[in-house]
Length: 594
Image (cartoon, rainbow, N blue to C red):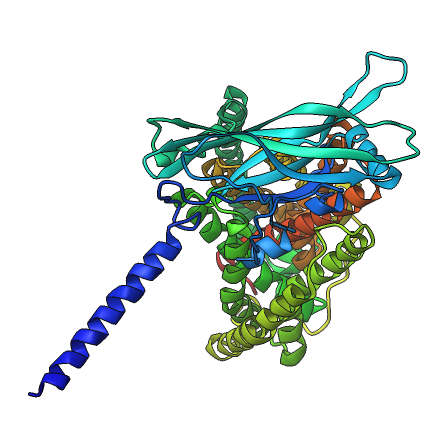
């Protein structure tokens, strides 16, 4: 072997080591959360907006703030960041790891009357901004109001003191304190010169890196005894309701079976003279193909997909602390939805085949576009409002293209594949009873057996089981609290599913006992009616519990709350419908039908 041939692998190895060392040095920043002494620490300014409206946010530079000379660019690192309107801009402060700085000038600016009025408006409406240091969020107000005088004075904070704690080569805590207020005059003919300054105070701490997000978690709020009591109360409701349903139905069905067996042994004349009523009378129509089968199949398939998605997402959120990374939960949810599109296609195709459906193309298209279409319509409306307000919540065009590409190249093909699998793998219609060629007339029934009453009454108990949890969820998603007790949410989700199933069984039995065979859509709406009460609660929360105001926040709040309620309607309606179908199959299998 020649010397040159031996030298080439060594040169390649050395080059590889150099590249690895360079990559390691490049990653020794906020992405790795490790810093060397005197290494630059970037302060990212995110958005600014009114405190009362958590979703009305604007880019930091839409207010006439100036930035330092340090120029650092940031790009959307995840899809969730772009959808949530994360707009990070480097403050430009010269901050070095573990090095204090005192009264350093960040930048200077000259304000004219227009810029002063912008600052006065923001201070008057309690605007505050969010920033990140090593992915740790920090909030502070733009200024403050001195209302001791008949005409309140408005002040702008011009100095920031960054209080940072570190353990070894990692940042553990980050806080900011604003000071040096400058009066914003209400009338100014000339200009106002402002100097923005900052200080940095580093302190060493023994707190481990794993606990650095603990200070953001409001354990006194989320782990309050009322929260625990609500979970216990809901659990006891499930036990009581399930036991009551089993007891009543077992006794009632046993009585029905005994009566029907006696009637079967009677002569035809005696049977005609008898008082025939009940669910057995509709055995020839109960398995009739429901109206709008394609839509119902798409709803059932989408509901099963959403149930699987929520279970996987909540389990993942419990195992991994997703709240420590910006928009991670949303990003994971989007890709999990895309990957589980196979589930919705399979079950919608299987359900469609079970009732002998023929228009497969329509069913597949409705399944693929039901939830994405609903999200798209709401997002388009909200995004139109966001653009008109020049808000940072406006979704960029490139992000829209990325979402469309996910649907075209992942969701749609997987839904099509799932529908083909569901169609080919499902068996022929196999019902316990034959379907009569002519539908049975539906007799008049009392008001409490009408579909409208059964549907509205069915949602009361399931909503009662999650009523307390709704307050915690709304306070988190429409406020500034970080929701981290996903174990509570998973438990409440399971309880809600069980209560919905029990209520669906009872309501379906009452419906069939009134000799009405149109149970398919009724059971679906009965299970999904809880979403209507959730939306009513959202109105109550907006009016009573929150301080939100303005058209922008109203459209954002009710747009996405309504979308979430529609998702709950599809999910809970699917649970109610499938459990009701299982119950009907069971009772008609165990009874002798002529």
